[in-house]
Length: 355
Image (cartoon, rainbow, N blue to C red):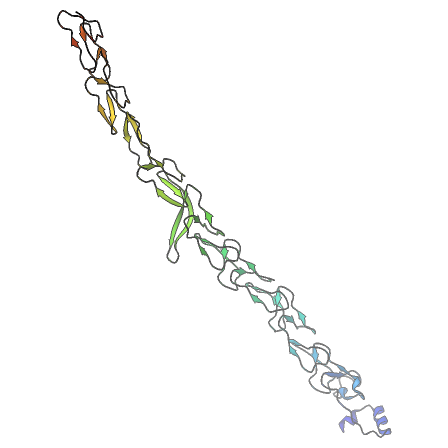
Protein backbone atom coordinates (compact mmCIF):
# COMPACT_ATOMS: atom_id res chain seq x y z
CA UNK A 1 0.00 0.00 0.00
CA UNK A 2 1.21 3.48 -0.74
CA UNK A 3 0.58 4.53 2.86
CA UNK A 4 2.97 1.83 4.07
CA UNK A 5 5.62 2.92 1.61
CA UNK A 6 5.50 6.47 2.92
CA UNK A 7 5.70 5.58 6.60
CA UNK A 8 8.78 6.42 8.55
CA UNK A 9 11.34 3.60 8.04
CA UNK A 10 11.94 3.24 11.72
CA UNK A 11 8.23 3.10 12.31
CA UNK A 12 7.90 0.46 9.59
CA UNK A 13 10.60 -1.63 11.20
CA UNK A 14 8.85 -1.52 14.53
CA UNK A 15 5.57 -2.43 12.96
CA UNK A 16 7.04 -5.37 11.12
CA UNK A 17 8.90 -6.51 14.20
CA UNK A 18 5.78 -6.47 16.27
CA UNK A 19 3.85 -8.23 13.51
CA UNK A 20 1.16 -5.56 13.68
CA UNK A 21 -0.68 -5.32 10.42
CA UNK A 22 -1.13 -1.55 10.39
CA UNK A 23 -1.29 1.11 7.74
CA UNK A 24 -0.59 4.87 7.79
CA UNK A 25 -3.73 6.92 8.50
CA UNK A 26 -4.42 10.47 7.33
CA UNK A 27 -5.07 13.30 9.82
CA UNK A 28 -8.84 13.78 10.10
CA UNK A 29 -10.64 16.81 8.72
CA UNK A 30 -10.18 19.89 10.86
CA UNK A 31 -6.59 18.97 11.69
CA UNK A 32 -3.17 19.02 10.08
CA UNK A 33 0.14 17.19 10.62
CA UNK A 34 2.59 19.11 12.78
CA UNK A 35 5.79 17.07 12.10
CA UNK A 36 7.22 14.68 9.63
CA UNK A 37 8.48 15.24 6.15
CA UNK A 38 8.89 18.65 4.72
CA UNK A 39 5.72 20.56 3.94
CA UNK A 40 6.90 20.44 0.34
CA UNK A 41 6.23 16.72 0.31
CA UNK A 42 2.81 15.68 -0.91
CA UNK A 43 2.85 12.86 1.62
CA UNK A 44 3.94 15.04 4.55
CA UNK A 45 0.54 14.86 6.16
CA UNK A 46 0.55 11.10 6.15
CA UNK A 47 3.78 10.61 8.12
CA UNK A 48 2.56 10.05 11.69
CA UNK A 49 2.03 7.10 13.88
CA UNK A 50 -0.52 8.60 16.33
CA UNK A 51 -3.54 10.80 15.89
CA UNK A 52 -2.21 12.96 18.68
CA UNK A 53 0.39 14.14 16.19
CA UNK A 54 -2.44 15.96 14.34
CA UNK A 55 -3.14 19.52 15.52
CA UNK A 56 -6.56 21.17 15.23
CA UNK A 57 -6.93 24.11 12.86
CA UNK A 58 -6.68 27.46 14.66
CA UNK A 59 -9.61 29.82 15.01
CA UNK A 60 -10.23 31.46 11.64
CA UNK A 61 -8.85 28.48 9.71
CA UNK A 62 -10.36 25.24 8.52
CA UNK A 63 -9.58 21.93 6.84
CA UNK A 64 -12.33 20.18 4.90
CA UNK A 65 -10.33 17.12 3.85
CA UNK A 66 -8.43 14.43 5.68
CA UNK A 67 -4.69 14.29 5.42
CA UNK A 68 -4.07 18.02 5.24
CA UNK A 69 -0.69 19.42 6.10
CA UNK A 70 -2.03 22.97 6.65
CA UNK A 71 -5.34 24.73 7.25
CA UNK A 72 -6.93 27.27 4.94
CA UNK A 73 -7.76 30.80 6.13
CA UNK A 74 -11.44 31.71 6.23
CA UNK A 75 -12.23 34.59 3.91
CA UNK A 76 -15.27 36.69 4.73
CA UNK A 77 -16.27 34.27 7.45
CA UNK A 78 -15.00 32.67 10.60
CA UNK A 79 -15.10 29.53 12.73
CA UNK A 80 -16.73 28.89 16.03
CA UNK A 81 -13.52 27.49 17.53
CA UNK A 82 -10.58 25.14 16.98
CA UNK A 83 -10.65 22.24 14.53
CA UNK A 84 -13.16 23.65 12.08
CA UNK A 85 -13.97 21.66 8.97
CA UNK A 86 -15.68 24.62 7.29
CA UNK A 87 -16.10 28.38 7.63
CA UNK A 88 -19.33 29.77 8.96
CA UNK A 89 -20.87 33.03 7.80
CA UNK A 90 -19.59 36.08 9.63
CA UNK A 91 -22.16 37.36 12.12
CA UNK A 92 -23.94 40.61 11.37
CA UNK A 93 -22.19 43.43 13.19
CA UNK A 94 -18.84 41.66 13.33
CA UNK A 95 -15.55 41.98 11.46
CA UNK A 96 -14.08 38.82 10.00
CA UNK A 97 -11.20 40.20 7.96
CA UNK A 98 -8.68 38.74 10.43
CA UNK A 99 -8.37 35.30 11.94
CA UNK A 100 -10.88 36.09 14.67
CA UNK A 101 -14.35 37.55 14.55
CA UNK A 102 -14.30 41.02 16.18
CA UNK A 103 -17.41 43.10 16.95
CA UNK A 104 -17.82 46.37 15.04
CA UNK A 105 -17.28 49.36 17.29
CA UNK A 106 -20.00 51.96 17.94
CA UNK A 107 -20.51 54.12 14.88
CA UNK A 108 -19.61 51.24 12.52
CA UNK A 109 -21.57 48.28 11.18
CA UNK A 110 -21.44 45.19 9.04
CA UNK A 111 -24.27 43.46 7.21
CA UNK A 112 -22.77 39.99 7.46
CA UNK A 113 -20.10 40.49 4.82
CA UNK A 114 -17.40 40.44 7.48
CA UNK A 115 -16.28 44.06 6.97
CA UNK A 116 -17.03 46.87 9.41
CA UNK A 117 -17.88 50.17 7.73
CA UNK A 118 -18.66 53.70 8.94
CA UNK A 119 -22.32 54.22 9.70
CA UNK A 120 -24.08 56.11 6.92
CA UNK A 121 -25.98 59.38 7.29
CA UNK A 122 -29.61 58.88 8.25
CA UNK A 123 -28.74 55.72 10.20
CA UNK A 124 -27.26 54.83 13.57
CA UNK A 125 -24.89 52.05 14.62
CA UNK A 126 -24.73 51.16 18.33
CA UNK A 127 -22.00 48.59 17.68
CA UNK A 128 -22.00 44.83 17.07
CA UNK A 129 -24.91 45.24 14.66
CA UNK A 130 -26.04 46.18 11.20
CA UNK A 131 -26.86 49.86 10.71
CA UNK A 132 -30.38 50.88 11.71
CA UNK A 133 -32.44 53.51 9.96
CA UNK A 134 -33.37 56.67 11.88
CA UNK A 135 -37.08 56.99 12.53
CA UNK A 136 -39.23 59.87 11.27
CA UNK A 137 -38.78 62.89 13.52
CA UNK A 138 -35.06 62.13 13.93
CA UNK A 139 -31.86 62.47 11.88
CA UNK A 140 -28.16 61.59 12.01
CA UNK A 141 -24.80 62.49 10.50
CA UNK A 142 -22.30 59.82 9.51
CA UNK A 143 -20.72 57.52 12.13
CA UNK A 144 -23.70 58.11 14.42
CA UNK A 145 -24.16 55.94 17.49
CA UNK A 146 -27.76 57.13 17.88
CA UNK A 147 -30.21 59.37 16.04
CA UNK A 148 -30.97 62.89 17.23
CA UNK A 149 -34.48 64.26 17.63
CA UNK A 150 -35.37 67.13 15.35
CA UNK A 151 -34.68 70.33 17.27
CA UNK A 152 -37.33 72.82 18.40
CA UNK A 153 -39.08 74.36 15.41
CA UNK A 154 -38.04 71.63 12.96
CA UNK A 155 -39.62 68.41 11.65
CA UNK A 156 -38.88 65.35 9.51
CA UNK A 157 -41.72 63.22 8.11
CA UNK A 158 -39.49 60.57 6.49
CA UNK A 159 -37.27 57.90 8.09
CA UNK A 160 -33.58 57.55 7.25
CA UNK A 161 -32.83 61.27 6.87
CA UNK A 162 -29.77 63.34 7.76
CA UNK A 163 -31.56 66.68 8.28
CA UNK A 164 -34.74 68.26 9.65
CA UNK A 165 -36.68 71.01 7.88
CA UNK A 166 -37.63 74.36 9.50
CA UNK A 167 -41.26 74.58 10.53
CA UNK A 168 -43.14 76.94 8.18
CA UNK A 169 -44.87 80.04 9.53
CA UNK A 170 -48.39 79.29 10.67
CA UNK A 171 -47.21 75.94 12.07
CA UNK A 172 -45.45 74.65 15.16
CA UNK A 173 -42.99 71.80 15.59
CA UNK A 174 -42.10 70.53 19.08
CA UNK A 175 -38.86 68.51 19.50
CA UNK A 176 -38.93 65.31 17.46
CA UNK A 177 -41.82 66.49 15.29
CA UNK A 178 -42.83 64.22 12.42
CA UNK A 179 -45.35 66.65 10.92
CA UNK A 180 -46.11 70.34 11.27
CA UNK A 181 -49.05 71.20 13.50
CA UNK A 182 -51.43 73.92 12.32
CA UNK A 183 -51.52 77.18 14.26
CA UNK A 184 -55.21 77.82 13.61
CA UNK A 185 -56.50 79.63 16.71
CA UNK A 186 -56.70 83.46 16.49
CA UNK A 187 -55.55 83.85 20.10
CA UNK A 188 -52.12 82.48 19.13
CA UNK A 189 -49.68 82.74 16.22
CA UNK A 190 -46.63 80.89 14.94
CA UNK A 191 -43.78 82.57 13.06
CA UNK A 192 -41.29 80.44 11.12
CA UNK A 193 -39.48 77.70 13.12
CA UNK A 194 -41.94 77.80 16.03
CA UNK A 195 -41.82 75.07 18.66
CA UNK A 196 -44.86 76.37 20.57
CA UNK A 197 -47.73 78.76 19.95
CA UNK A 198 -47.17 82.40 20.90
CA UNK A 199 -50.07 84.07 22.70
CA UNK A 200 -51.28 87.30 21.10
CA UNK A 201 -50.63 90.27 23.38
CA UNK A 202 -53.54 92.36 24.71
CA UNK A 203 -54.30 95.23 22.38
CA UNK A 204 -53.03 93.22 19.39
CA UNK A 205 -54.66 90.97 16.83
CA UNK A 206 -53.35 87.96 14.93
CA UNK A 207 -52.33 88.14 11.28
CA UNK A 208 -53.50 85.21 9.19
CA UNK A 209 -52.82 83.62 5.85
CA UNK A 210 -54.95 81.09 4.04
CA UNK A 211 -53.73 77.62 3.12
CA UNK A 212 -55.98 75.45 0.99
CA UNK A 213 -55.31 72.24 2.89
CA UNK A 214 -55.49 73.66 6.41
CA UNK A 215 -57.67 76.75 6.23
CA UNK A 216 -56.69 79.91 8.10
CA UNK A 217 -53.29 79.87 9.79
CA UNK A 218 -51.99 82.59 12.09
CA UNK A 219 -48.45 83.76 11.46
CA UNK A 220 -47.97 86.96 13.48
CA UNK A 221 -49.58 89.81 15.40
CA UNK A 222 -50.25 93.50 14.80
CA UNK A 223 -51.08 96.38 17.12
CA UNK A 224 -54.72 97.38 17.27
CA UNK A 225 -55.52 100.58 15.30
CA UNK A 226 -57.62 103.54 16.39
CA UNK A 227 -61.33 102.83 16.19
CA UNK A 228 -60.85 99.16 17.10
CA UNK A 229 -60.65 96.99 20.20
CA UNK A 230 -58.47 93.86 20.15
CA UNK A 231 -58.90 90.96 22.55
CA UNK A 232 -58.03 87.27 22.25
CA UNK A 233 -56.27 88.02 18.96
CA UNK A 234 -59.50 89.28 17.35
CA UNK A 235 -59.92 92.85 16.10
CA UNK A 236 -63.41 94.35 16.45
CA UNK A 237 -64.50 97.76 15.18
CA UNK A 238 -65.97 100.03 17.81
CA UNK A 239 -69.75 99.77 17.63
CA UNK A 240 -72.01 102.74 16.96
CA UNK A 241 -72.03 104.94 20.02
CA UNK A 242 -68.52 103.92 21.08
CA UNK A 243 -65.00 105.04 20.20
CA UNK A 244 -61.29 104.44 20.70
CA UNK A 245 -58.79 107.15 19.84
CA UNK A 246 -55.62 105.27 20.90
CA UNK A 247 -53.77 102.32 19.38
CA UNK A 248 -53.09 99.04 21.18
CA UNK A 249 -56.35 99.01 23.15
CA UNK A 250 -58.59 96.13 24.09
CA UNK A 251 -61.86 98.01 24.73
CA UNK A 252 -63.94 100.82 23.20
CA UNK A 253 -65.43 103.58 25.28
CA UNK A 254 -69.02 104.84 25.20
CA UNK A 255 -69.32 108.09 23.32
CA UNK A 256 -69.81 110.98 25.79
CA UNK A 257 -72.83 113.30 25.54
CA UNK A 258 -72.51 117.03 25.29
CA UNK A 259 -73.25 118.95 28.47
CA UNK A 260 -76.29 121.20 28.78
CA UNK A 261 -75.55 124.41 26.91
CA UNK A 262 -73.45 122.55 24.35
CA UNK A 263 -74.16 120.98 20.99
CA UNK A 264 -72.30 118.38 18.92
CA UNK A 265 -69.56 119.89 16.79
CA UNK A 266 -68.12 116.54 15.53
CA UNK A 267 -69.85 113.21 15.87
CA UNK A 268 -68.33 110.18 17.60
CA UNK A 269 -67.21 107.95 14.69
CA UNK A 270 -65.27 105.06 16.30
CA UNK A 271 -61.84 106.61 15.83
CA UNK A 272 -62.85 110.06 17.12
CA UNK A 273 -64.59 111.08 20.32
CA UNK A 274 -67.59 113.42 20.40
CA UNK A 275 -66.59 117.07 20.15
CA UNK A 276 -68.94 119.66 21.61
CA UNK A 277 -69.19 123.45 21.31
CA UNK A 278 -71.08 125.82 23.60
CA UNK A 279 -74.16 127.66 22.44
CA UNK A 280 -73.49 131.35 21.79
CA UNK A 281 -74.62 134.12 24.12
CA UNK A 282 -78.31 134.77 23.56
CA UNK A 283 -78.91 131.06 22.93
CA UNK A 284 -79.71 127.94 24.91
CA UNK A 285 -79.56 124.23 24.11
CA UNK A 286 -82.52 121.99 23.61
CA UNK A 287 -82.23 118.43 22.29
CA UNK A 288 -78.62 119.13 21.29
CA UNK A 289 -79.70 122.15 19.24
CA UNK A 290 -78.89 125.77 20.05
CA UNK A 291 -81.97 128.01 19.98
CA UNK A 292 -82.31 131.77 20.41
CA UNK A 293 -83.64 133.08 23.67
CA UNK A 294 -87.20 134.41 23.64
CA UNK A 295 -87.82 138.18 23.59
CA UNK A 296 -87.09 139.78 26.91
CA UNK A 297 -84.71 137.00 27.98
CA UNK A 298 -80.97 136.56 27.67
CA UNK A 299 -78.17 134.11 28.30
CA UNK A 300 -74.43 133.84 28.52
CA UNK A 301 -72.46 131.58 26.14
CA UNK A 302 -72.83 127.88 26.98
CA UNK A 303 -76.09 128.30 28.83
CA UNK A 304 -78.60 125.53 29.07
CA UNK A 305 -81.47 127.97 29.49
CA UNK A 306 -82.31 131.68 29.14
CA UNK A 307 -83.27 134.00 32.00
CA UNK A 308 -85.68 136.90 31.74
CA UNK A 309 -84.50 140.47 32.00
CA UNK A 310 -84.80 141.72 35.58
CA UNK A 311 -87.38 144.33 36.60
CA UNK A 312 -86.03 147.78 35.74
CA UNK A 313 -84.04 146.30 32.85
CA UNK A 314 -84.63 145.34 29.27
CA UNK A 315 -82.73 143.40 26.58
CA UNK A 316 -82.88 143.78 22.86
CA UNK A 317 -80.27 141.23 21.78
CA UNK A 318 -80.67 138.48 24.36
CA UNK A 319 -77.06 139.00 25.35
CA UNK A 320 -77.02 142.02 27.62
CA UNK A 321 -79.62 143.63 29.81
CA UNK A 322 -79.79 147.41 30.12
CA UNK A 323 -81.38 149.54 32.85
CA UNK A 324 -84.44 151.43 31.86
CA UNK A 325 -83.61 155.12 31.27
CA UNK A 326 -85.05 157.93 33.39
CA UNK A 327 -88.82 158.37 33.20
CA UNK A 328 -89.28 154.79 32.02
CA UNK A 329 -89.84 151.57 33.82
CA UNK A 330 -90.09 147.81 33.33
CA UNK A 331 -91.42 144.87 35.21
CA UNK A 332 -88.76 142.62 33.60
CA UNK A 333 -88.89 140.04 30.85
CA UNK A 334 -89.04 142.70 28.21
CA UNK A 335 -87.11 143.95 25.26
CA UNK A 336 -88.08 147.58 25.94
CA UNK A 337 -89.05 149.87 28.85
CA UNK A 338 -92.41 151.61 29.11
CA UNK A 339 -92.70 155.38 29.43
CA UNK A 340 -94.03 156.76 32.69
CA UNK A 341 -97.62 158.06 32.52
CA UNK A 342 -98.22 161.79 32.20
CA UNK A 343 -97.46 163.77 35.33
CA UNK A 344 -95.19 161.00 36.68
CA UNK A 345 -91.48 160.33 36.62
CA UNK A 346 -88.86 157.67 37.44
CA UNK A 347 -85.20 157.24 38.02
CA UNK A 348 -82.90 155.01 35.94
CA UNK A 349 -83.69 151.34 36.34
CA UNK A 350 -87.10 151.98 37.77
CA UNK A 351 -89.73 149.36 38.09
CA UNK A 352 -92.52 151.92 38.68
CA UNK A 353 -93.11 155.63 38.13
CA UNK A 354 -93.82 158.23 40.82
CA UNK A 355 -96.42 161.02 40.53
